[in-house]
Image 1: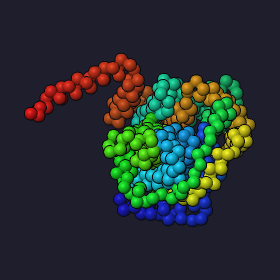
Image 2: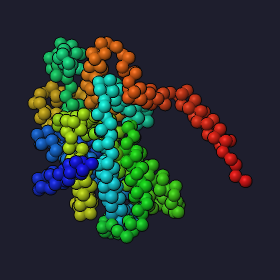
Image 3: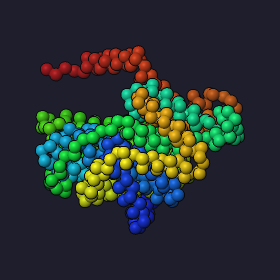
Image 4: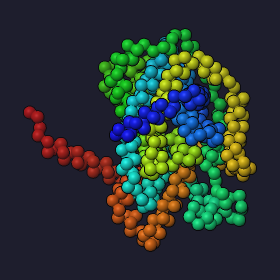
Length: 511
């Protein structure tokens, strides 16, 4: 424990230099801008910045990405309050009360409440990140090739619920990502697979062009195809929060922080779930339920606290197990791999201090959103006045440059254009791209773990189903799939109802 505290202290001290602070502020600024612009997202911010930070030192690059992640989710509350359009999906719960306050002439007050809630909840999440991640990583050190196989397969299974409402579409995209990961030379003996005699495919599909195409180019095409123009609400009052007013909602902050972190720990549950569950919990215990949706400070605080606390919650399983819980965390994990850090059970051995460095990064990110939220609100809102016909071509140029810059291969640009165009049409049919990226990231791990396991067992499949951790992962994976089978779901509901009735009948009745 003392060693962990020492590593954490060194991590904080290591980030106290002007250049690192500048990187953090820059990443948060870009993230907030991405979050403010409706249609853009935290996922896109991380994907684009991964290409722009490829030459930076690992810690500096990941600091920029984490700050942009936090900044984008925070920035989305601006348009939720002023336009009634959530900048990201996680900010949808903030629309009702935030916009209602703006219509009452209290837009600044609403932004101040959102800022303070986001800052406090992120710090609460950072505390949980520092506490739970090392312990979970220690448990994960007992994993071998057999456990890694089931871990990767479980992660792909989660693609059915990571985004969207149709698990079948998520699984299809996850399987497509697994297939794309097999293209090129395989990892053990360097044999070409699925190249069809095309030498360019021997190197496989690089992760950065796939990320930029799936999120960057597809987002550009989607935004230009469906432009939305809304009038911005005037902001005449101060954005500085009333700290006494915030202090009276400490129960809401604590409850929503716990809910946000808990939903973040669950693979497949996005940041929006943390916001909605926190909002529902606040309304359930509130003495002023009738004010929710009409400008409730309690409701706005709960929504913003819940979604921001889920960010460190998503990072915990991402670092310790290599299983991201949302689309932005899936892209963040891919970016870590690109920068030479492999999240998962081996992280504590290969990079023993990295977890504490991420804790320091997330703390710095929470401080940067507080600074921008209180002192840079009005200048940042000018971004909404930039015509999309100007902004989207700039994003497209960044996509092309980012795809080419990593390996200087024209093939990567063609791959980005092909994946991006396909992603555009797939998204219009309801297929999300996060499962594709998750399958692409986990595909190599699944393939290598399966083949290494078969080598260790002399071709026997028995260890994959008899080792304790394998049994647990296999059971959870199978149960997750069966949950989406209508017959099994109905049977489970009937069984739950029967058990509930039986327990009620056994309990003594009150006279």
